[in-house]
Amino acid sequence: MIDDSNSYFNFDKKANKTVPVKLNLEVTYKNRCRIRDSVHLKPDHIEIWGAEEDIKNINYVETEMLSLKNLEKPITQKVKLKKPRNGAFVELVPLEVEALLDIVKYTEGSIELTPEAMNLPPGARLRIFPPRVTVKFNAAYEDLQKISEQQFRATVDIHTMEKGSNQVRILLSKIPKGIDGVRLLPEKVEVLINKE
Image (cartoon, rainbow, N blue to C red; front, top):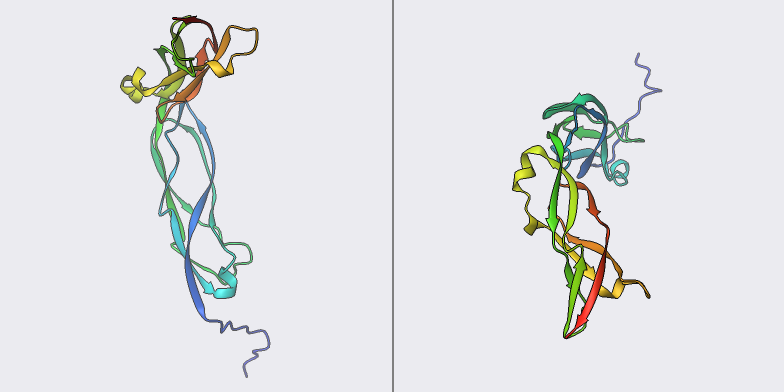
């Protein structure tokens, strides 16, 4: 005799949808190294299968925690996916993804720029002291030689000059991709407006 008093069957129509994968990552680096850009997941979206009622509110799937220490070179690591909460009857395809971390050594770089004047009255000329400013930044060591003055734009907006002051804050309106820790030396310059 078969006791089926505890048997459960789900006869709901099976459905599927594609959702993004969110990586749970703890990482430490060695010797000024870090991830260039961001972590790439392969695949970065997966399929989930289950009853329509079970999957309709699932908008993403998380990975198990990936803990990596003292990274100093690129690494590819497989990481398992976690079942969504309240997703006992949900099937994940695939069950794991690959995390690709492009680890590079970062170093400090600097570029000198001549700030451009903005909102200068017609017929006026602007003199800036100092005439050039230094931009300091962090970049991947291998990218440092490719970074040039043309990839930056520093501006001095006369409309931002405080009343009774001849100092203006410098704005960086353009910086190259892939750099961070950007700072200006000096942050403000003195300006003298000569009318012709």
